[in-house]
Image 1 (cartoon, one colour):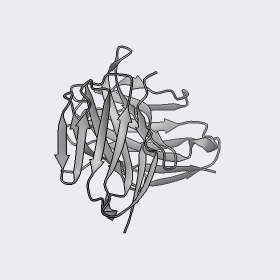
Image 2: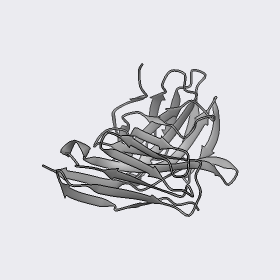
Image 3: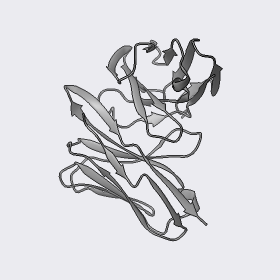
Image 4: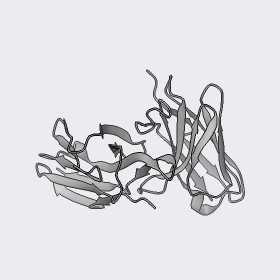
Length: 114
Length: 113
């Protein structure tokens, strides 16, 4: 069974540009979560989507947004990139609101803002 | 604001030693998970505990959920270099009318051969 996949692996942007990160959940999972992880630190929750709807949002500015598609894959968009947005962005999936605490993670996208 | 405090933040020990990592909160959780993350990779789920006082073992790793479901510990016996990584705990439950998963800041563990 394929795990959570994310693309691209690495992304280099400059300040002010926009970044789009993609995630495909494990087959059968309906929930997708996005996290930001600064270098070697803990996870900061960004967004939770389930069945195409945003279920919860972390304490991030509106320039962080996303969506979930009918096939449950998801996109994270970051507009007007700032230097401090440089981080590992992790996507996780779960069986949905019935078991949202058992999350399986992808390898992440390393975003570097220059 | 719910917080999940992990301690220690950093631990470097010799192969063969034992260690314990703690995860504490003032909030009650319906479940608590432990993850391990290696550099450049996503966290990997090690265990989920849901019952107060529950103890789970995974080879040399022993996980315990506190009786009041506010805290948890991870004990590693005879640590090996392969145990090196960032250990994260996460507590789940309904908070502020919404389901939330609260993450600890992590314990960076280095096992020296």
